[in-house]
Length: 76
Image (cartoon, rainbow, N blue to C red):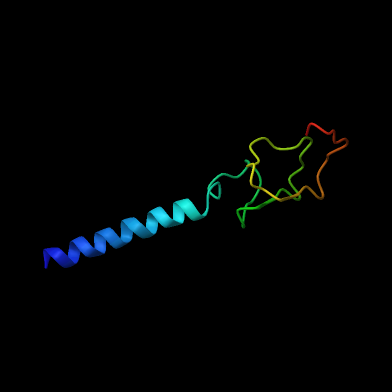
């Protein structure tokens, strides 16, 4: 009986480790935005006046529609 419990524990730990490795950065999302997919950040309808801080490096698409942004620079 103890062997079975140990096997289940090892399996759960392994699956957790795989999930953490496969989706790096998926737990990090800029405040006031939504990250439904690890490579996308959705910040629509947030009344933003500047680009949010903390956008992960692996993000490929940022949706900033319907905000109060007046100017974007190359450094944003």
